[in-house]
Length: 397
Image 1 (cartoon, rainbow, N blue to C red):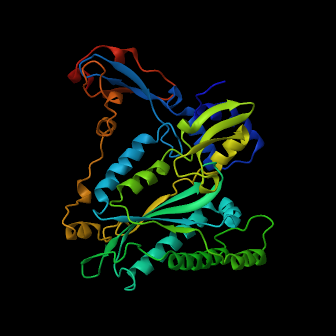
Image 2: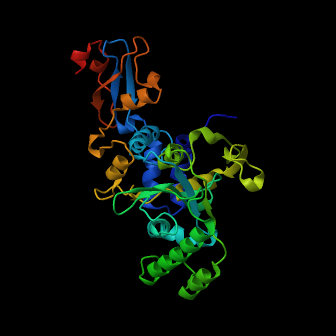
Image 3: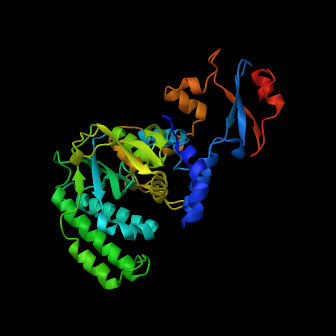
């Protein structure tokens, strides 16, 4: 019985057979191929060496697919580094908008358009309510991240939203949130439900959302009419800063729905993995349990959560919209901070590892110097023997 398992092993062993017996999308094929070949000679690579000639290391290229659990750490850290500088130095609220599971078939057949409706409904709800003098009367910063799974890889479409506890008025004044609770939950839920249903109906009428096989237009309208019960919208109290929630969102920005650390073993045609217990199971947000799924079911569930190609699963609105008219620079200045988006220089992988305390991954084990990358080689090939000749920094360059 093997107690160490990773997604690459499962994909290499079972995906070729799975692809022949199931109609999988192009996005799913691309994700599976990338993960099967991540950090192998099929993708080429380079050599990392100590600038003083003490140490050499062959590094195969990563696949850079956003769902790969093996190589998502570096781009995730770079994204986090940028947002830590961009976040306003004020408290932030965390909200979660969850879609009723009866609409899951619509998401399966219209992932891109369905997610667009979710982003629009949530952002419009918050911008309109917080822009009203009844609540904030200002323009806040909003950062939203789309998740489509739960801990057991079931379809669970929801949006995590980070909202600044304050905003910028039209005359450039900063207004802090008036109450401990940013917005009444029932008000948010009612407005969001109305906007989501209206936008969804418009998309179906315009032919931009396809009804699943067996659904008629009348059945769709009847379903929308029934969806009048309270929707699952959570509004949490303010965090001292938004960094902790951004870190939480970043976990799902890269790496896919499940990390290799949660995979335990494959036995008797089933995958055993850890999951966090829900409130209904007596969980407290930390307690974990074990569950198992047939291997094919596990892989199909994982593939179902591969986002459409080039689809933006994390979006900013208001002060965090990212355009030149967002007002983020003015907001920082009003709060007494200095922020220049043009001064952000991309860091090298060595600098990112060093800043994250993972200096062993980017430094020579003998002298501690930062490793230097050189002698790139093409996919399917091995590095030339000349790459391992002891040489100084000047000779490597």
